[in-house]
Image (tube, rainbow, N blue to C red; front, side, top):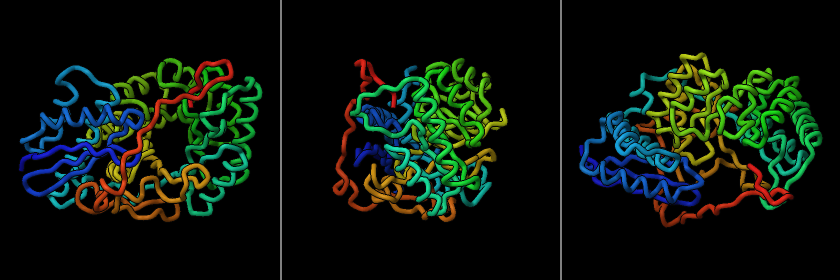
Length: 385
């Protein structure tokens, strides 16, 4: 079998790759470099020149060539490698007529626990959405930002005391609304300084969050380790990382308990499996990052199926007030995933990753580029969101 074409597909808000072969088998993958998809698409085309005419089966070899050949890396590049890697695993699974997890050691579990996305510009809306997802069967709720999902167009300012006190009270309201049988996955979106993160972490400990995600920007491993030392909530982080060595550094500093590899950014299924192995050696757990389409979800679920230290899967359910719908993000672009039931989703059992893009997808879903944009502070500087 030989690769005959590698096509980047910019569709809706997503970047896919379609890898075709002379055997008539086609693989699909997705890039997670969502802020720079055009750059990642160019990288896919560049790697396509290398892959043309090659056997798709030696995936580990191709993975190493793509990441090591020219000594440069970064999110746009690893997003491209990730998309291609997922597509190559998809081809290999289809060629053997088995799900990818069968090629990775077999299935540990037949379904994966999920946390749904909860968003709100006000605490009332956040609570309302949390209760809606609880009633829909979710046993865990994530993307829960006690600092709220305010508009990027609104200039921001709060005093330290107001910011921390309000956020603590927001977590209290969420816990009281859903009760102790629903886990709260608190997500800060890298918006705090180390002192703020410690103050907020200590303040919400009594509400028993499952984890405290991305309190800081991913700039300093030592700063994250300092936060972890001062609070009694597990840290979750890693969604912005594009190298397994970044995860290794965090683990050796005792700075993380739940690793958040993005299968579409960290090197695809090959890269995510390596991260999971490093985590297992440190008795840490894996929560695959997944803010993308069902192609990403399906790839994540192949990892969830076959690793022993899988904890829970991010499931990008949409918020009606902010996202315009209730179903899974990008649901119209692909088929093959089952609906969640009681907070779990079945692992796709079809060949490859188990999902496919819908017919005529390129005509039906034209690309919508993301602008470069940052929220302003009232003093004219920029605020992380």
